[in-house]
Length: 130
Image 1 (cartoon, rainbow, N blue to C red):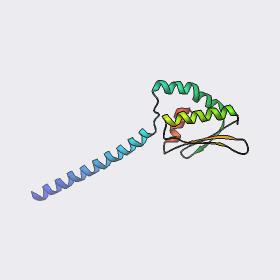
Image 2 (image 1 turned 135 degrees about the vertical axis):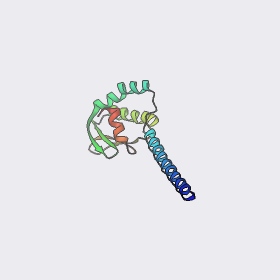
Image 3 (image 1 turned 90 degrees about the vertical axis):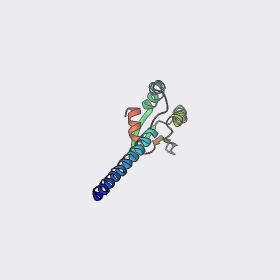
Image 4 (image 1 turned 90 degrees about the horizontal axis):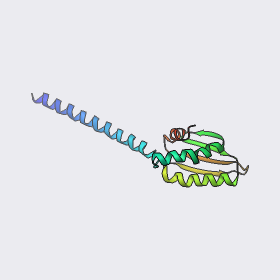
C-alpha cells in the first residue's frame, strides 16, 4: 500500500511539474505576443490606416524582406523624408517594439528599415496589408 501511495504521489508531482512548465511556456508566448501590439484604439488605428499608412504605401518604390521586418525604398524628396520622420515619431509611441532606421544613401536612395523581434514581419504584413 505504501508503494502505491509513493507512486501516486510521484505521478501527481510529475503531472504538476509538467502543468507548471506548460503554463509558464504559455505565459511567455502570450507575453511575447502582447509585446507585438499597437497601443492605438481601434478607431485611432483605422484612422491611421486610412491616412498615414495609406500615404506611405503609395510612396513605396520597392521593398526587401528581412528575417524580422522589411526595408522599404522611397523616392528621395524633402516631403517624403518629413513624412517618414513623422511616421517614425508617432509609430515609436504606439508600436514600441519596432526598430527604425531611416537612411539616405549617397546614391540619393531613401530607405526605411522597419524591424523588431520575432513576429514583427508578420505584424507589418498584417498592418500594411503587404
